[in-house]
Image (tube, rainbow, N blue to C red; front, side, top):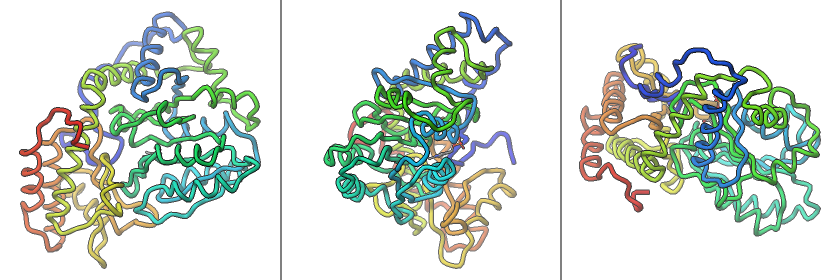
Length: 396
Ligand SMILES: *Cc1c(COP(=O)(O)O)cnc(C)c1O
């Protein structure tokens, strides 16, 4: 594997030089005002990226999975009813975590390739007249299938049912790359990590809690220690953590937020849409299909590409690594061997994307698929030539 080639896995993503430098810093006292000068701007930056005026931002030394656990354990009690849909490996894992915490999950089985069924959520919530469902889970972007879901529609489902359940959103592979509106969508807990849209190494769980989620922490009985947001809040008030923070990564996060906000969130989202459209143009030119069922659910951060029946899609990933030193994502769970994934989020340009498309193409030809060298690259080139690099409101 080459250290020079970009990666095309849907996280961890490529790390810009400036962020690597920001993470590389001498030891400082992590219980000092100097640490506060890193911590508080980083939290403020995250709040802006989440598009929230008032969310409480907590950042744990952990990963996105720890963010899931933070959401559950701080707001719920054993036996609480949860509503969730399973449409891929990541929604599956969050459901599994709920069950291991003795939460009673009503699972809406949803075909892999489809988005969250907001209308089904509405029916279930409307029927729950005693308001026994305490929280609704929504995976904004299913990284396993390259499917985005409509979180605004999930909020509308809750509102239409007049249901007070909390709304928890897994935004690990969407936040900082695709439009995310914590306040507007009435998200109670937003979950992400450092190694996807924020372009850092893995190591931070990043969560935003609404006022309603904070209120739920007062009565929630699930055990929590490491992920206790009250302990964390107490620490923050003294420019500290309840334990030792990942100072370098927090400094990197602060810098990452500045980068994103300087580029402008709308420009960041438009860049992701444009790069994704080029990848999708290539997939079409190859005569292949996405796992995502239709354009309304196409993800702008990852494409899961179906390979022909009888072909093991994982061979592409293995071959790309061995022969060209380039990383793509394998299919997970139900779609293992049926799809390979091109991650296209974080620090990425058209030119980098073209190198990934060209490599995938070489691999597929090497492995005997009926694909013409250059066909996908040409389709993406055509698309990129015709679309400028600045934000276009209608690019989405
Ligand atoms: C990557 C990812 C996770 C898991 O995050 P980790 O940082 O690996 O713990 C959860 N959900 C989604 C949608 C993801 O893409």
